[in-house]
Length: 66
Image (tube, rainbow, N blue to C red; front, side, top):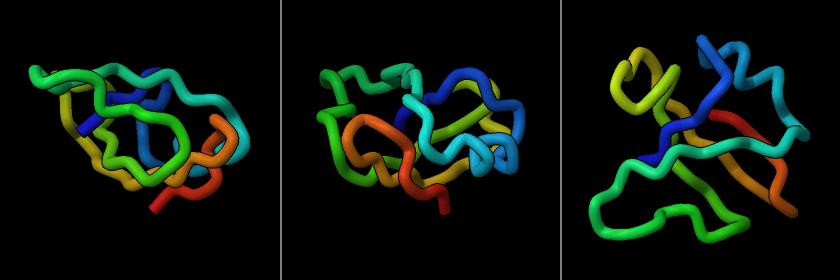
């Protein structure tokens, strides 16, 4: 699970398709972000988990938010 910065709501995140995200790593076992792919994220920050989303990243940019 990755944290994502700069979005108070999932709706705001959905409006950010095409932008480059800034992730906050939350794992004790090493980096989870490995480039293009699908990731589970939590917001508005890793400590306050008000919403969850699934992001698809392509060429380092957000392509889809579920």
